[in-house]
Amino acid sequence: MHPGRYVFAQLMEHLPLHALRRAVKRYDGERYVKRFSCLDQFLCMAFAQLAGRESLREIEICLRAHHAKLYHLGIRGGIARSTLADANEQRDWRIYAEFAQQLISTARRLYADEPLGVELAQTAYALDSTTIELCLSVFPWARATPPGLGGIKLHTLLDVRGAIPTMVHVSAANLHDIHMLDLLVPEPGAIYLMDRGYLDFARPYHLHCQGAFFLMRAKRNLRVRRRYSHGVADRSLIACDQTVTLAREVVRNTYPVPLRRIRVRDADAAGSIVLLTNHFGLPAATVSALYRHRWQIEIFFKWIKQHLRIKSFFGTSPNAVKTQVWIAVAVYVLIAIVRKRLNSAASLSELLQILSVTLFEQTSLARVLAPPDLHNLNDQSDNQLNLFEY
Image (spheres, rainbow, N blue to C red):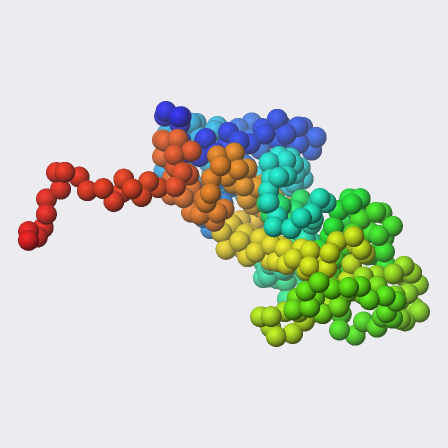
């Protein structure tokens, strides 16, 4: 129990503040700062994410309405819209990126034994990106293709165990997805799930040479030569399982070793999809089931766009945008950490909805996030009068 503690303060107790202090010191984030610290900035921005605030003015009004509680929430500096705007514009976004990475490391340890539904000893990652449209008149630096459009891309590498983002990169919207493979440091033995937009063979071959595995959809115009056909246990699911080489010499020079080609029947779409991988040790049915987990990253993008504030930004500079994105990621991971530590069966979206209306309650966080006792709710008090008598 936490008598007298606010839910927001209990939630923030799960933050590794030593990591934030270390990042602030590394990037000199509090030079010339007298009152409004980087922790105050993070807590205000985290409040905006949890409470669904849409602007700096809303943050200021809501927190000032609870000015007597701010000290107990951990906020020591004064709340002013201009102060928060200046902090987002000037303080290095890498402070919060590094802090979020520490939270990610904690969450991955907590979810390491999370059931995946597939017998898999290796770590599996899903790689994809989503575009956030911006107005060029407000964000002139965020030019995209075609001309006249503005936006940024959120490139994410997601650990499918627990749906924890392990790498987030914010880029211009016209950066092709495939360039993210140049920034990726391959983890030997890991499996990377990707869509066909990442297929150019030179970069997947680099993954192969580093001891990592990839699994992606093949393009329709891909030409291959079959070497072997492997036995298939369930023809209703797997149409074929083959060892192939690339047919065109130019492409084969970029990927000179054999590939595994699996055609998976899609009962819902009454068709099939073709998967390519360099992993020959997994059964074809396991490869098919594993690729379905790639949709977790689509669900992740949908979740953060619906529930977190990353589509309307509080600042217009690249630093302010990246700061808000990384704090949003940190809040997402923090909720995942609390969910695991408190053994909550609720989904992350349910937890966020509960927290959004209970931040200023003085009750135990575990009790707030616990499922309701439906038995007690249905019990009628003995003193309850009957409206109708039979």
